[in-house]
Image 1 (cartoon, rainbow, N blue to C red):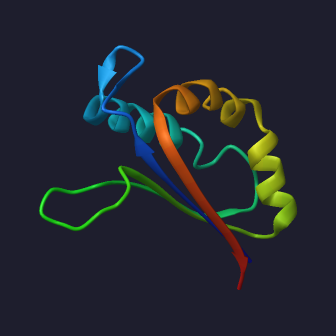
Image 2 (tube, rainbow, N blue to C red):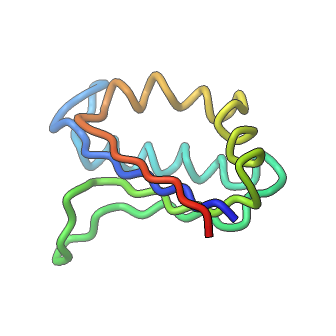
Length: 100
């Protein structure tokens, strides 16, 4: 199994919206990717919650059957459609993949 965790810090304003609206839009778009390829075992999109410590605005926690499933997800057209919007609204991105 391969875990793929990505965290985004968003700009205060971008793409005609504020940080909170862009975070919700990112979640909506990511949630649509939860079943786009075989081999996705877990897929959870979390937004920072008031009252809890967070150094990022949006977090993706996902588990893939193997590296091939993650590669298929990354190359899938539905996932690729996210990239321009995400690049426009993000201030920073952190990622870690690891095998379990």
